[in-house]
Length: 274
Image (tube, rainbow, N blue to C red; front, top):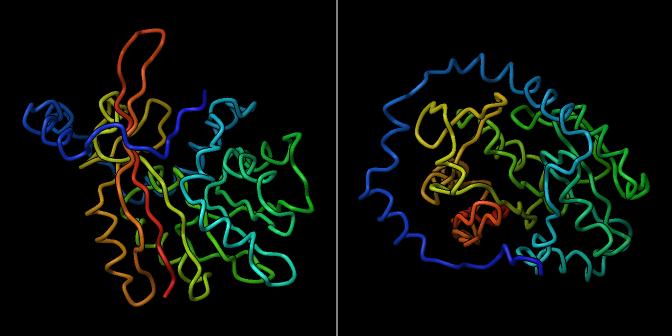
């Protein structure tokens, strides 16, 4: 049975109050590690290349079939569009192609995917997948913190940004949304999903950098979003973008080997180009 990762199994605010009143988050703050911004920017691509070299099979990530349900009406709008010709979806941080390969056989043949990532190794693995079809998936290297340098045939109707910005230092999150906004036409949307504050994995992190930001054991970054934080970023771009959906997605899961309950928290949002 596929777990419905687009559902809500517990109240986020109740859980947040429980965590903050218990003081269980304090141990991360007590061991704060300072990271230089420039060093963070220059090293992240190499850290992810090393990560993908170690996980070449792509089995590290599970299928993301739930994405179709999470953003159903936006994908269906593209499929049912009366426009002739191809419709383009661009993914930022495509990695192994986990999201694209969960969608490609469920959407119209007229939908073309542009897979972008700042790791060349990730994109190489994506093209080696048995489902790769060069007529429907175009691949280009792009570091989302920088203005896009890819020559697109036309603006994408939709941008997928799934578990991408959590791997980028928050100093650059504004740049990322600005760069996405710059390639969209009015009415197009960004489908966003990422880790939410107090997700189970946040309490497994060891190296605390700053509020909700950690460095994993493999040297990649992990940031945990709040609604207020994402709203503050989009507010700075209010002349270009507006949030039309935003909520926490809360999932109660169980680790079968340890019998431990895991409370997973994700931030869901749809952001529209004005």
